[in-house]
Amino acid sequence: MISLSQPDLGEKEKQRVAAVIDRGPQLTRGSEVDAFESEFAQFCDTPHGVATTNGTSALHTACEALGLGRGDRIATTPFSFIASANAIRWCGAEPTFVDIREETYNLDLQEFEAQLRDGEQIDAVLVVHLFGLPCDMAHLTELAEEYEFLIIEDAAQAYGAAYEGTPVGSFGDAACFSFFPSKNMVTGEGGMVVTDRTNVAERARSFIEHGATDEGYDGLGHNFCMSEITAAIGRIQLEKLPKYNEARRHNARRLTEGLHDHIVPPIEPAPCRHVYHQYTIQSDARNTLRRALAEHGIGSKAYYETPIHHQPAFSEYDVHLPMADRLSTRVLSLPVHPQLSSEEISHIVDSVNEHSP
Image (cartoon, rainbow, N blue to C red; front, top):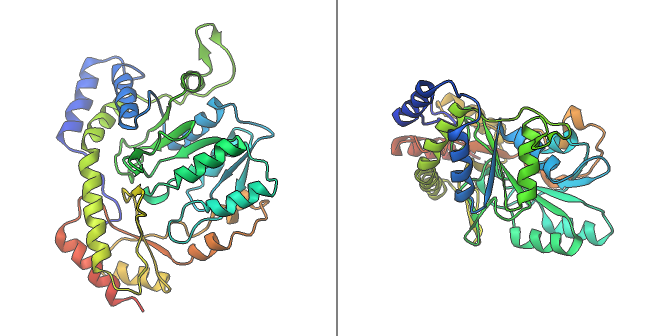
């Protein structure tokens, strides 16, 4: 079976974890976490990194560190993993869903700008760089300056991606990453908040440590701290990340070049560097194609088959988002991970072409 994702953990990761265990007894926050935060922040061209337990806790932490809460409205996409919207509600704020663009799956900023001009009051935007493709950050930062709202980047699928040569994670007031096993680099679980604002980093660090400050426990917080073992794996994976991303980009080119015209492949707009966390196509016969690929031993999945505003937990959000609804019936993600062989890529291309109308 050609899997949709395949983490690559090898001897270097094993040796680094063994070294942490041998050093003992420091298995909670220590030198590995400190180093990983610094190295990852540098990778994102930001001065501060705060390591967390996972990507969801990173999003929640960023919202809290930016002072967002009850009474605030945060615009975001309905076409993402549900954690994006859940984090908004966990901090007490309310999500405002904005429809997406057909060709990029990211926020439709033209529609969002029209809503702002019509008087929509927004305190922040949680923008998702979906599938590894950056959103139009030039337009979004212009809107943020004009309408005075904060930007949180959900870059869980996009580390190493860039907009006009600038890495994602360095545009917003804070940005969040995930190291879940399906991502471009993995630690098992784990997340990161990066920011160029010292006060936000300080509040984030306090929040993940039960609200601890130099004066005591100054407010509510969680235990969202990353372990030394997780950070040890992350440091090795970060070293490998540029190689992983180049392999994904190479595999994506092979897929795009081979697929027939009746399949809509992902695009890479000129200002953007796509890192293909997912290689997501559109097909008029998505479900038939998915079943056929399974019969050929090829893993695939529809991200996202049910947009967030149709999930039971968000049933009170009665919004009309036609593009998200339409694409949820058409999208299918194909394997693009670095472990694919040339023969496997050819098999994927041939199978998709054979079973597409």
